[in-house]
Length: 157
Image (cartoon, rainbow, N blue to C red):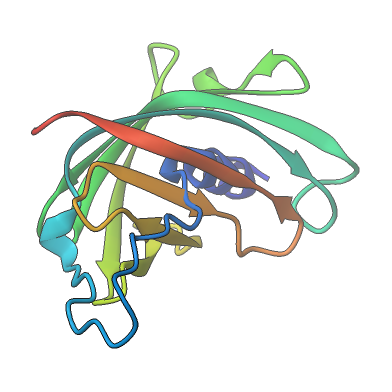
């Protein structure tokens, strides 16, 4: 259950969704190109997810807040505070009331990608603004109903 809760907290942290790039006239050849370096810096996040079986024993609400630090090389760290149905789950993971998770991520040339919690293996989908200023994360695990973001970059590191 702890891994599931940690995974869900990370999903909300990751924040993903589709950010549409402006489209030029028909036949335009300058489509945005993204790489792992597009995501670099600190991104604030917060959100609520609905958990249903198999992610939880019954329907539950997960609330999370924190920030992602993407290193621009496919690695990073999430700093998360979370509660399930209003009860803090942080002390289950670490002291003080915050959990820290190593992450890895991929970014495709079309600005889509994945977000994975290292050691846990939980993976989520993500979409990145072509300029790297925003990211949206969405749940891909069974039982996790989530779209979180857009999360704005608030610092270059």
